[in-house]
Amino acid sequence: MCDVVTALKIGAAVYSHQAKRAVAKGKNKANEQTRRNSDQAYLNDISKIDREAVSASREKQAENMKNKLKKQKDIAKSLNLNAGNGDKIIQDITGTYDQSFLDTARDYETDVFRLDTQEKEAYAAQQRRYNSIKPVSMPSDTGLFLEVATIGAEGYQKHTNAQKPKV
Image 1 (tube, rainbow, N blue to C red):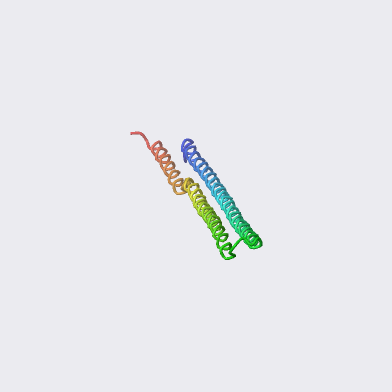
Image 2: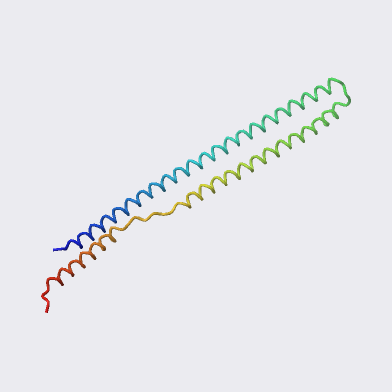
């Protein structure tokens, strides 16, 4: 028969094990929510970057179209005014607008490089969030079994020693 102290120790060990399991499950649940939040933040960042990329592309196209139309207008205006050699007028105006085209292309490339950097930063931020999640270990059922067995053996030994006649 086991004594009350041994029974209480076993009960306390089981309760402690259950409490540790509940804490570990809570931490795992919190870690999973952190991962979901991190994924959502990453997707939001990527979505924003994609919208900026589309906007930059539209801006480039609009600027190119505006330049093309202005160039055509200026050429037509100069030719209609009979302002001199038509070939020279076209060369002069085209040279001016070629520079404008290059400026637009450079600005677009700068935007693309900036957006690429932002994508890399967004991914790095997600990796930092994932890496900050501390792993959780569940308490071992084998450890509980060994603890209960040890407590039971100690109780049995005390009980056996108490039953022996004193010499």
